[in-house]
Image (cartoon, rainbow, N blue to C red; front, side):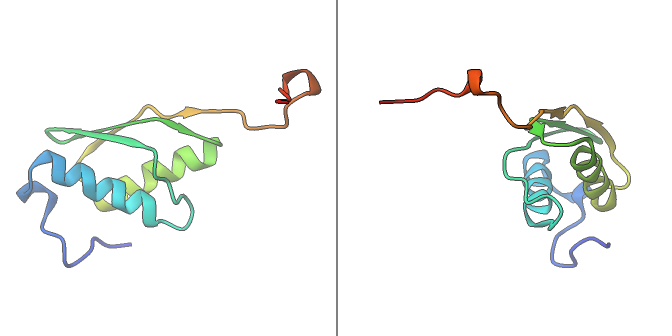
Length: 95
């Protein structure tokens, strides 16, 4: 996977623009379609926070960012949230 030809080099853009590009890449990737990952750029470091459903998705997030920003250090701080079935005691019924 290569960088979008329409996009300027991340080194030429303000950090908030680079962060928005990262959010776009995560949103359009078919393996993720992630809209709720927070991205912060500090120099050549990318900080990713939020939650994902599996360790595999967490790894894909890192892969996507590394593909587009190979010269950046990635700090994947995403938490993996167990989305397994809830027990009967955890279900709340509203009347």
